[in-house]
Image (tube, rainbow, N blue to C red):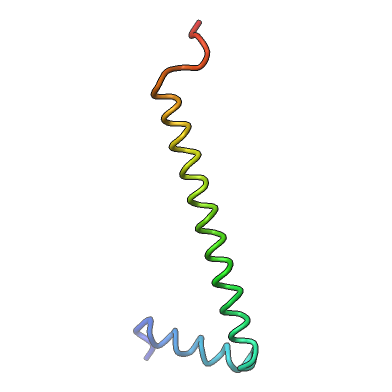
Length: 66
């Protein structure tokens, strides 16, 4: 009966409207959008740090080997 992901998505939207009411849905979507944006910013920051560390290691060790 519910073979497609689209069916489940429709059910989730209807359930969300029933539980949260139509006035809370835009607020929920706004919060979700901000959360996704912050997650992406954090991921980009971590990737930059990793690339900087890899570049520093490739240029040579900072302390002499024993």
